[in-house]
Image (spheres, rainbow, N blue to C red):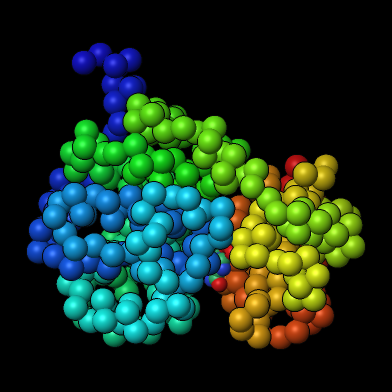
Length: 355
Ligand code: 5GP
Ligand code: MN
């Protein structure tokens, strides 16, 4: 094979010894629970459904059990009806975990991101397989690691894993659609975290399965309720403040605001990216009152080299990636605004120097 032909080959993901360990782990398991972080997004749902389809194809008894519901705009995904939600059916999930001989943890790397479901997973005696693309985390909590922070998404990782496991030929169009969805949502439709040429080989492999990417785009992004539309409008015009000479912004989303716009799960997803459209804006912080717990959820997004994860760890009890991170604050939203303003202040010089 010459050099140009090699460029069109998907490079192997795992070295042989790791692949063998993974295969042995799968061989020894029969009843498998697959889970992802609370508030699951397109990558979490897409990767768990695709991994479940593969395991079922191997003859395993595989179930996707997620800590909380995913947004409505992801409910069309093939396999959605078989997902069990811990918040709705805790006893069912507990029973599944009790008899499981493997737990696959996808798209997160710290059990605390399972929220209320963390405790039952911690108590479960089965080995834990991690398949994830976040950096940091608590990797000692897992028995086997397939951890690749350089990847766009867990869906890209799962696709490359399935390819290496020889499962591509049998992959269905439905599974390919799940994987495409996660890659699309985690890269903001190929706007960020998507410069590796190999990612486009992955997309090409999915397109060969006749994934209808236009239809997926519409189902995920052009599927707004009127309430969501007016909520975004009102938050951005009434609840946004500018800091650090216009290099940073904070907005708040209160329960009251959600109520008056008939808020549905997922309606605020992506809103934190909007201020980054302003010229010179380098970091956007969203503070959202949680609908269940008495905490304020923090989301941080950046462009142009500001490290969100460090800010999340230092000020917001959280973590994440360089360009997208989050956390939570255990006090009222007015105080959360003060903390966020202080966080920005601590980075004011750095924000000025980023070009
Ligand atoms: P989001 O703003 O979409 O909720 O989260 C963005 C990213 O920040 C997530 O993919 C995750 O990596 C990270 N993140 C969000 N919330 C938390 C948290 O409470 N703890 C940690 N460690 N990471 C978080
Ligand atoms: Mn992800």
